[in-house]
Length: 355
Image (cartoon, rainbow, N blue to C red; front, side):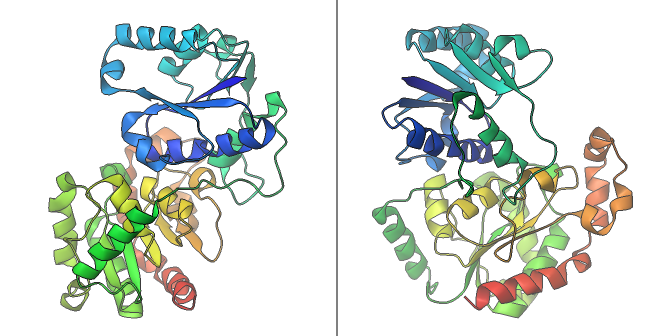
């Protein structure tokens, strides 16, 4: 049996959908399992023991309809028995349609349901602390009789011993003591509409350092360096002494290895939070106003805490105005003052420092 799972685009999505492979492997131990993903997301599923083969959705394919059709025809030649489309957008619709698979499963959408033998209506309310992003993906396995255990599968990241050793040496060479508290700050989001105001973020970091005296790392990519430096300069002088700006993951695997030595990851909701959870690192997540907690606030508890403006000012979120909320994200972010949740943050910090 050959099974293809399609999950394009974002790192967090690719990591989350990887749970399907673990569930499939237990049900079909001899199946050949393939994963179609954007090639830049590969590091988060690298070394995953449940995935046999990867197919990459390259930038060239993304830009060319002709190359997309060619990819779809190449996939058809693989003669998959089952295609599970966890992405469910036009490009993956085409691949599923042309795949020739007898069983094709995806999320129900009115315009694409005819493509799939099993269009699944996603839930709107989670029934566990895993969150809808995980629960709805697991629903995709129901048509092929994959029994889901009471303990919902969590995404996992697989680092090598050498990767961890190199990260530890980098910390030591940078005068960071791995035996003392280290906190990774997801200081910037993937865009302005997912980035907590920089002056507010500085106040959050001040609170972290004041309470824990932790050694602080920033998660950012080179093109975000200017904004990261702004946050650094907005922090109190005493806080700045605890921040190691020059120590950051120069690639995704290096970031993962460094994060594995942290006591917590704190900051903007996004892929970094999902990766930290997959490494079993406690997280404190600040949600963008337009992103719903019920979808991505996975495995909430003492070690995974999240805050959203809606928790404090629900009147800012009229029913059925999702698109309007996204348009007003920057205004709503300014309403989301750190003072609303600093006590919650302090409780979280108490929890992780007592470990």
